[in-house]
Image (cartoon, rainbow, N blue to C red; front, side, top):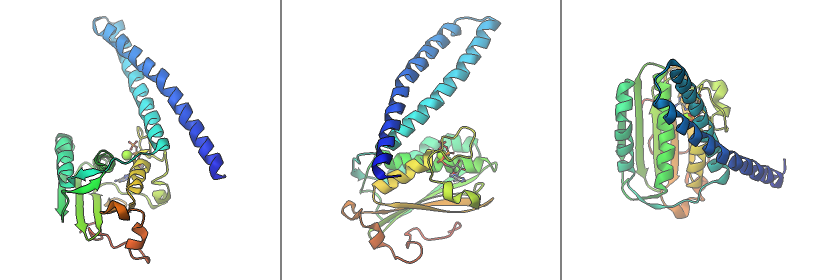
Length: 255
Ligand SMILES: Nc1ncnc2c1ncn2[C@@H]1O[C@H](COP(=O)(O)OP(=O)(O)OP(=O)(O)O)[C@@H](O)[C@H]1O
Ligand SMILES: [Mg+2]
């Protein structure tokens, strides 16, 4: 398909998603009002109605998430680069997820090395990307009744490496090609937009993302970013051309 036709289809789909969003928020608001009305009633009829409203609200929220993610994906981001303390960001993310991790039997680790306190990044987007990877890691580990989720960050020379590692269910090799494809999901409630969004954010920062995985053992996502935004168009020239890039965090799931 020609790129102008693709662009046209993208715009069309973006317009459609936008038009769906408005009635969807009306439906959501009306359902919430209805839910409030039924909160005051205590009959079996009201209990059944409340349950049905809950189901509807859950589905509407799910649709809303899908449309929102599609819109953000279709539009892309204008990066707002600010001096960011990546170490603090991960610590705060882990604090936020701590209770949930504890409840699900997940141990969290954060290792870091190098100067992480003054990096030019879009903090909101990088946080969103990390959150998506860590959420995936949680979900992979929960499948196995607990385990470890490790974030490693390291600045070495001109490169920043961030790894998100889990000891979860791993990825079937037959799915490798589809991992970053929009809407690819193996989860009942997944949208399949998490990883495409992560990749988009990493690439908008001039970086790249790869993964390695072993079924039943775990998975490791590797992000590589140039530290200097001026060099963000030239990541390929900064890493060895043959084989995989010399990732600052090192290689191998167990490192
Ligand atoms: N750490 C991981 N371990 C094992 N499988 C993973 C991991 N991360 C992603 N996957 C696989 O890749 C698929 C796509 O991930 P992605 O984050 O894009 O969507 P999702 O997690 O299914 O849905 P959503 O992010 O919307 O909740 C997942 O359904 C899962 O099969
Ligand atoms: Mg996900």
